[in-house]
Length: 106
Image (cartoon, rainbow, N blue to C red; front, side, top):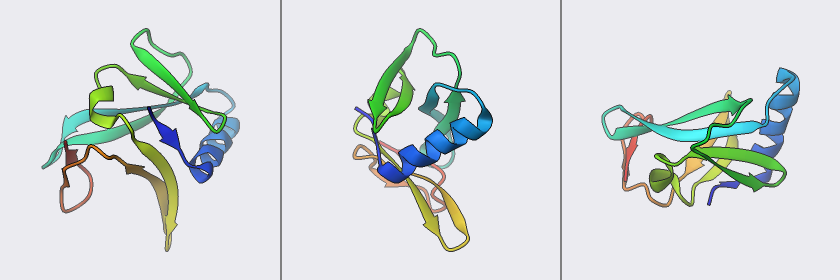
């Protein structure tokens, strides 16, 4: 299960509307960084056969089957901190994050 906060859902819908196309977003992981895994986030125009679709607050989130064991239960939020803003991932499976916050391990 993947969850989306109200703020994140509105932000995703706004970005897709401004983009002019898209069914939702894809969240996944890739091997990188000092802790081993990093989140990837991209728009989805055409889902793949390996995508699992979750819908929360009117927003579609696609996850490939290989990434799901690392992010099952994830909550996607959108936060503003000072001049910075962006998506924040709250993963109950995370055991540790690197010092710069770019990668994590489960």
